[in-house]
Length: 405
Image 1 (tube, rainbow, N blue to C red):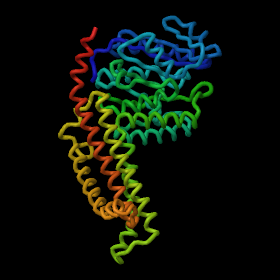
Image 2 (image 1 turned 60 degrees about the vertical axis):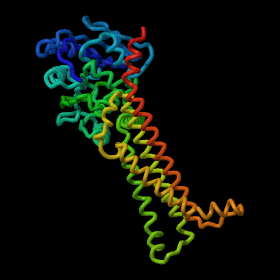
Image 3 (image 1 turned 90 degrees about the vertical axis):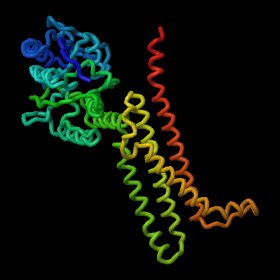
Image 4 (image 1 turned 45 degrees about the vertical axis):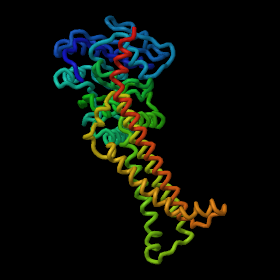
């Protein structure tokens, strides 16, 4: 996915009431711009300050510097909105940003840019979790927990999912957009990059100082937002990373619930009333697990279709996502359905003959659950056939749309 030869770089400094640090941040960024031009292939460095509804002297101070652009939001739109506006103001081959609070060293853009140019990365994060980091303990703990969660979901590892200093190839943005306007802009970018196998991401430990002024981060509120965007990215690309543990847990509990009733029945060949609640709960959990599994499979196929990556579901695809697996599951549930029908056949005959049924509750319960699961799997398999047909039509539809005036 990577492209070669970036020659321009735009760095955005989003600022909300940062009069105490904005001046020194701009000065350091302008000095770093010269280092970037000397030590990397970048020829043009653009510096854009975006005031996100500041009510102090931030705009006044920023406008006192020559050679930069200043974008002013009259009202607060959000950290992410400011960064995106800065990128739109001066498009470039490489896009970056750093916080205006004095915590990041702009000189660190040099190794970050070289990581993209020399190693072919698409996104480079400036990691704040190194030995010399002055990050407050509560934020260190939060970042570590989010990094562990995202590492599990993506099967990749970064230590700082919310870094406020980054460089990204402009050509990689379509794989990351849309991104939110708020402070959860950075974890959303991290999550989507890590979940997307076509985006090469790297993390470099950088020096990180304590901020000047009061932090805009609200630990609880923004923590939940960060969690939401991480889970949302996983659901969009790899929802199975979220659902398979849940399916496994539900299946295990369902199995454990039937052990005691099954043991008593096999030993004494009788059923007791207390078993009904165990078997009903067990059957409900098993049915929910099958429904979630089928929904997961369909969702991942639809996601691959929407992202134009459906070739991944070819005949060599292993495990749960193979059509053969669903066909096998369909035959299993069909067999269970037929058994359920056999158990209830005398009840159907009795009902049509007399209008009454005198079957044991266990037969009705097993028959109903078997029928529900068979229908769910059958519908899922039919939906996948439709999705496969849509995939086969995609090239023709895309070509037709491209030819329209």
